[in-house]
Image 1 (cartoon, helix red, strand yellow):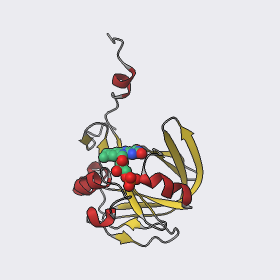
Image 2 (cartoon, rainbow, N blue to C red):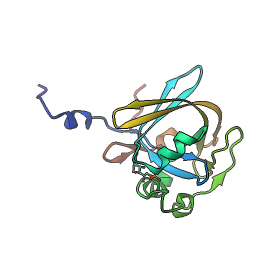
Image 3 (cartoon, rainbow, N blue to C red):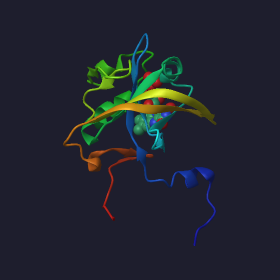
Image 4 (cartoon, rainbow, N blue to C red):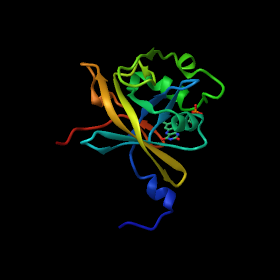
Amino acid sequence: MKKEVSVDDGTDAFSGFPVVLCSVGGEKDNIITLALCHVFSFKPALVGIGVSPKRFSYGLLRKSEDFAVNIPTRRQLEAVQVCGSKSGRRVDKFKAAGLTREKASKISSPLVAECPVSLECVKVKEVETGDHVWFVGEVVAARREESYDKADMLLYWGDYRVIGEKLG
Ligand SMILES: Cc1cc2nc3c(=O)[nH]c(=O)nc-3n(C[C@H](O)[C@H](O)[C@H](O)COP(=O)(O)O)c2cc1C
């Protein structure tokens, strides 16, 4: 039998959301770790990221015409934690996290070379939703390592996880 719980305990029930590293250009480029990332449309291919206005990256994303969604794996966990705890206001996160800028083909924001998947997104919409703003971008180019295995992708919701059993 289900019992009534707090709203926080209710929303805490999700096992995890995909962890991405969003890189964005500008007078100072930056990387931010995000768990709020979702596909909003297949045709056109639209991907959204939810960013709090408190983040340094928020101002960069407002100004930029594009951003990149890079998918890290368990091998980049340390870099994910650095990009999700330090602020680009004070540090160069590429340097602090030991990550390398990679030139994108269709956008001006840099990609993260160490991530096995990078999606180049052109901003098409900004949607305010409570305490986060969703930046929705059209994926105009994508790169993916041949050896990329989804089972290594990180999920986060309170704890870091990777996906479990394949059921179908
Ligand atoms: C696993 C993880 C997921 C996160 N997800 C989000 C998110 O979806 N949206 C957000 O605004 N901040 C999120 N954060 C917090 C930012 O990454 C963090 O505040 C970061 O230091 C902001 O960097 P900036 O000041 O350079 O923009 C997350 C942090 C971690 C560690």
